[in-house]
Image: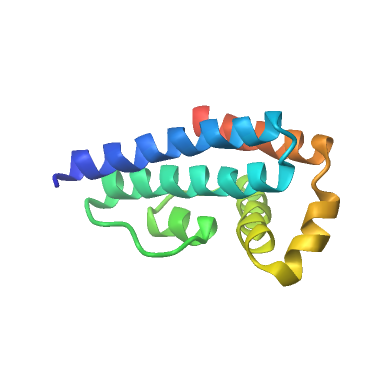
Length: 123
């Protein structure tokens, strides 16, 4: 697979995950919306990594580490967003965190982060 094909693969997966996140939001599955939103951002960053670094992306789910490995200069605001979104990956996945995470995942909470994630992906 060429570098361009790898980058395209990650980008297409990111877009697919974003659609799934939106569908979960519409269905009221706010915790899964945010979990999948994390995946969409992760895969977008992996696409960027492939394009900029010309190599296979690191095997990590940490958005901040992926951005830094890609030599992206993150603003404080974006670094804070990525750090917060990182927690959605853990809290939605592991049962010891799921209950607490589910409680904070209101429609407004999910809408706020979904909007920020979409803006980051599209902007």
